[in-house]
Amino acid sequence: MIARGHLRRRQHPSRGFGPGPFGLSAVLCLAFITAGCGAAPGSPQASGDLALIDKAMQQVEKSYVVPVRSDKLVDNALKGMLTRLDPHSDYMNEREYQELLATTAGEFGGVGIEISIENGVPQVIGAIEGTPAAAAGVEPGDRIVKANGEPIIGLEISEVVRRLRGSPGTPVVLTIARANRPSFDVPITRAVIHVDSVKPALKPGRIGYVRITTFNENTPATLRAALARLTQQAGGRLAGLVLDLRNDAGGLLDASIEVAGGFLDSGTIVSTRGRRPDENRVFEAQRNGDLVRGVPIVVLINGASASAAEIVAGALQDNRRATILGTRSFGKGSVQSIIPVEGNGALRLTTALYYTPSGNSIQGLGITPDRVVTVPKNAQVANAMITYESDLSGALKAGDSLAPNGGTPVPPPRRIADEDRPINPKVLGTAQDAQLNIALDLLGAPRAGR
Image (cartoon, rainbow, N blue to C red; front, side, top):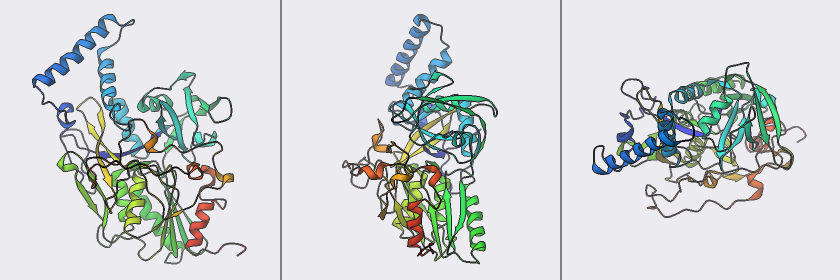
């Protein structure tokens, strides 16, 4: 199970991560200090706020219809505080934090789906290839309304993930709501999910095809190995490359920067801007970093390409390194820092927004392709529509005080019905993939019957 997200890690002084390969900031993380509260700890306002919370907890412990533990109240209070900020901030207790670490490391136990929460309802972004969920026929756009007969509508995404995960070999029954049919049960046996984030293939005419399904710790190294292997298979040089970021819900900021840098010899990859001065960063490509120098590139995106995928697409588009083809991307332009709290889990806090090399915010807007190519009806997920970042309740707007335009509201692009249709994951990368076929045509690949 993967929730849609874009993560950066902050180091805790005694139990954290080292800075990543791009030297991401290491920050002491104590809840009331690093979260940036308006009132300093110990001030009259802060003391009054804490006293109010304490009074409310005492009343709940004394009068609630059934006994409730104080630590559960604290967890719920923190979750409420974070999740009301925007759709991507949250508080994770220690168990949830360790589960997140397993996910970003590229291996975890569960059913193998990517989800987001839309209006309180868990919605499937996609089933990871080769997982129990994919074998069971779970599709993008499916709403999961129950797990093992227990309703999960209205739960935080971390709690949904917990209920769907479990020991390998154990069963879980998902109750699915799908458009134009009654809800139905899907029995699934959990397994250890190995996220192979890079899926390469050599297409006719020495055209390399690389699909990135998520951005985890292993993605950059796996991509380098895949490109080297494809180049060898092509006789020493590729004639073109298709980088497929469709249905890629995002992942680690570090990984997206390193992936984009693998196709650039210079130039800006992305910049981040936040309230704290140390959040204002510009990430540049390393000199001579292009792994396929001189090889023309087409990048495929769609409405389920989010976060890290949008950083890569925006960097290659603005640096004129690739042609972007497909439909408008999801529009998640915010960065979530994982801030450990000593012995008590971690905060997943939105700390910055990111901008393409041209200074354009992706938040709520997405990446607009150079060439719009919609999904043919016979390759669509039937009766499903794409939900964008701008559709989410509480989503940050592109016209914010951090933006170059000084905060002028920017409306999301006009929705076009044909662009909002998700592609059937089974079609991706196959001969029936019309978007891929057009990309191959652009790169001069030979086609049967031409």
